[in-house]
Length: 134
Image 1 (cartoon, rainbow, N blue to C red):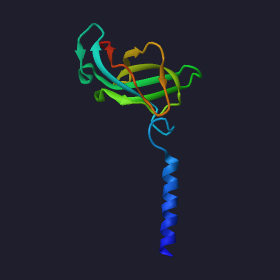
Image 2: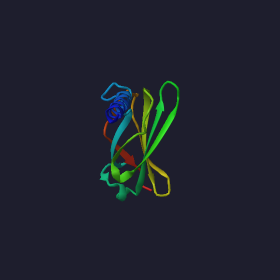
Image 3: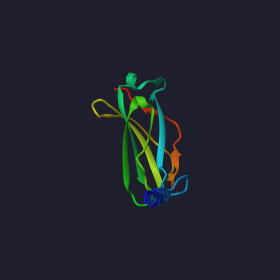
Image 4: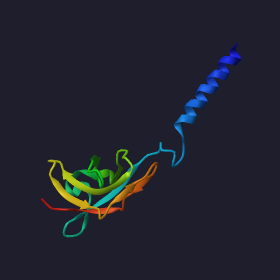
């Protein structure tokens, strides 16, 4: 009797694992943008997040075909982050920097579109956000 229950349990576990899939192309992997940034004064010269008074960097993406907009917020001092999971499509991308009063002090719009494919993390180019002094 115990052997029958063990066999049934093994079958159920096997079905569960088989349904989850694994590896690239299974349709179950992450579909994200990975962004990395540094800061520089608009007139030149690199600066830290603290030195520029920047507390937040936002990643804003828009689906090129249907116009859907997605928004992610990151602590500036992380100097990078991954977007939320996104539907497969092509996107326009922008990074925006904000100070502690939620005033936008820097922006970078990526040229062209970037794809999100099934199960793939798309690395965006490393960028330097130009920060306006205020």
